[in-house]
Image (cartoon, rainbow, N blue to C red; front, side):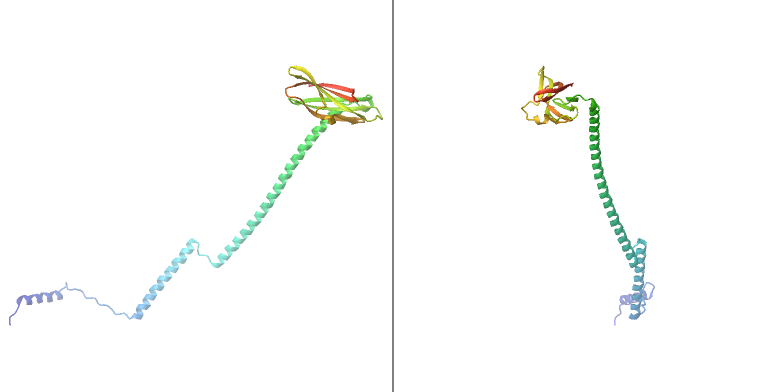
Length: 250
């Protein structure tokens, strides 16, 4: 039987390698029963869950979200109270605005009334000044007379007139007649006279007179365009006859 020196040498090298420090290390595992493994896993899960809950509660308390049911009820009650106060304030504000609008309307009406009273007061003052120029009744002349004729231009072709016609004497009968106004103008560079009423416009009723003691007459005359008014003369006519007359320059 022949021997193989090469093969025997190779086996010896492998044996020495296994027995040397360069040989692979062996791991020894301890056998743990499965109930203990489950218990350990449960402990790990419990500890992790408790930590997670603690972190969650800590975060809610830090951020202010840790609100209890009592706090929710209290906040809801506070919200209801604020809503009620808001409604009360809104009602009060609406009532105040309505009152303010009423006061403003009353103030506008009062301003209108004051203006009307001022205009009436001015008119009364004018009337007083007008009548102060009259002679006392005891010294008034017999018959019809014109007192205090006033005339003024209120527009280029309009003339306002005011006069008072009186009849002196006690127990005088009612006077019935007409007023006639004669306006002296310059028209087309020439002097001219215009008589009112002219019998064409149909306004003779405005110039009728009917009084026992006095009658106030006033109005506005409209003249043709382009005329220049110089003077006006008032005449009292009785059955076509001049009973009194008075003139005023413009």
